[in-house]
Image (cartoon, rainbow, N blue to C red; front, side, top):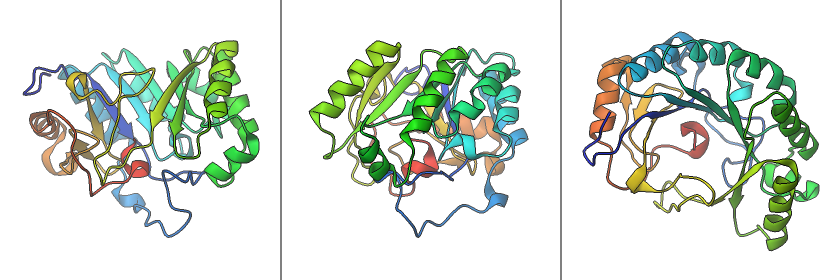
Length: 266
């Protein structure tokens, strides 16, 4: 699919849940979250229908996000269903890594190709504070399991905030070089303020070459992370929702005052 600016839209990011087992300080409040009712969340069959239609329109790259996708019950089944869809060439997942060691073998067998893991520091105490209770040992074990199961390249997403030290950055870089992981620095962004930056070590944040649209857990096809527009597949049908989203894809991101990172799949 080509948008108005002749960008080839071949990448669909799918948020499968707004739930998460961490409360990272730059992503979610510690409490007081209004969770989406389960009746509003797309079923696996609805998600696969969107994928099937999207593939028929030129999409060949899929990424599963959340929230935390590994807390969605039956997530391995969804991976298998998407992987079995003819035309899906690349199926990846972004995860916080807390349950990755447990799931890596099943995910690999189901057809997942690779993972991105969120990790902002190698300091275990600092990691626990940033994530409000995360266990860095589980992340380490999860990345190792993913690598051993062929979910490669394992990429690490490091969000740069005011608390990020030069030691954090350098130690992560050395760690990735020693273990064959790929490191991406992502500067902290604000949907409400419209502040975003190119990803160091990745293609994200470069509007001129953006090739993606997003499916939220409630079924909205969004043309841009930094956009209030969305077209629900239950209302419009998958094909029309995709066409509307691609048609409204902006030349550059602006602001998003409707969503949060945890419920849009940042």
